[in-house]
Length: 597
Image (cartoon, rainbow, N blue to C red; front, side, top):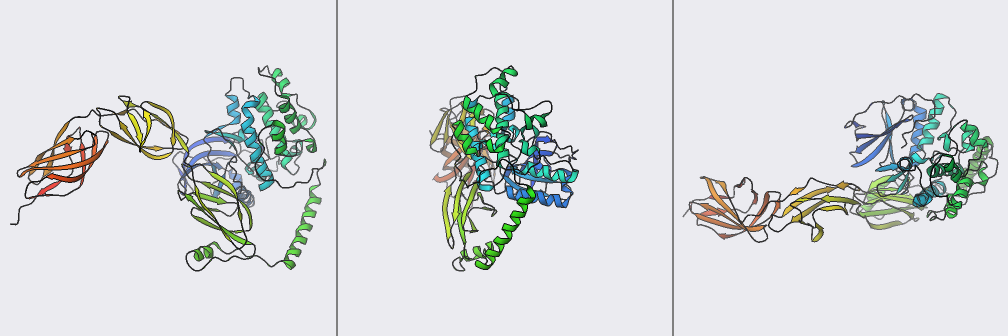
């Protein structure tokens, strides 16, 4: 979600949108997050799934070319399979005849580029980057070895840090797809990436692989540690191909930046990533993590053949793939019967009492529920459903990702077993946290949430589970105050100071009866929430007990039982609304009934 201008030579046509505008019958625009050569990014509310998203709008040139649009759709669908906690999720690709956009996870934070620029010396020190390096290595290892996707545009502006301090890699596959699409339409040479972070091979337009991301990794952290990328002025293309950048400690001296000498392990690792020959670079991010002594990636690994120093010509590789595909098709056609995945509808019908679910050979099912239910669950490339959910799936391993507003996301690997419905059970979701600042007038009120005390006011920066909640404010000599709040995940809740009302021993008012206004008195008990209500009439006094809560100066009560009652008066239990400032009851409570005797 970078806001950098793209180096593609394209004069992009951008539509003007307005906050509050609804697009594609689903998204309500809130504010712009960034603008660049490839389009604009808006924060929007997905009113269908009830969550905030980032919408990356596409250039008109892409929207109006059907072939290019289909290519981009295909790449976006592939990106849907990336369900790692440190990778920005891609949700959907939507378009109409006028515009189109990619819906993705909204990150409430900033880029590493901006965080670096905000530092006094404009640089990070290695120890400040260790956790983020570990998280980035984990994300790239997952993408390279599990999803088989290369980023191709890794840079500081595509590395975001949320409010919890977690790293999120954005634009996985999107930047490459957009650049390739634009190059087809404008005849510009495709250099899917940003020049100063490109490997020599990427600069020459060769088919990309994970070692291009390794180079960009080095260029990215070179900049974060020195304030500048390895090559940033003059003939950058030529320098990338031919020149070796100075050690990072030396670059700091050249730029007159004060700082500690950089650890030799970091110097050596970043320099190795920037090697011209890809075979001399670290061959995986796991190797990088080991050299920097940060926690290694936790995702699975697939065997990858060692890279040759010269890349295989694309035409020869394509012919080899065609031959392998043709032989593979012949082999499976004659030696294995075709497998059929039963439709989702038929599986659900079976689960609803039409007999046990049966699966074709090699096919199984996965069932998942959450507490609370209603979470959005994504299973590999099999789509999204709300829990409780059941998926039919070919036997094998899948990435499971669960998210629900107000709760921490859950990601794990699960396995579908042949001819079995695997019940993953009920996964308990943990509420995400909010922070609270709360003051009362006067101060010193005890803040209760259920039976738990959060302390006395003023409260500052108290961590609390997000979601709707009710606090009770209790201060001796003052009316208890019930206070409702909607706590938003990872945001500070800071209402204006809450005023408490002084408790009086007796409240007097009137009520409208059939023969006009009659006096009414409310006497509070010691707890200031229960008490007795006395209503006078021509026949005598009706005395009723009640229990209540205070909402500011308003008493919301429920009458419980009659203490005393004149003959001929019919009392009906109802809810009571008593406003101390007005001293009146706004509901009719009793009616006078003539005796039939």
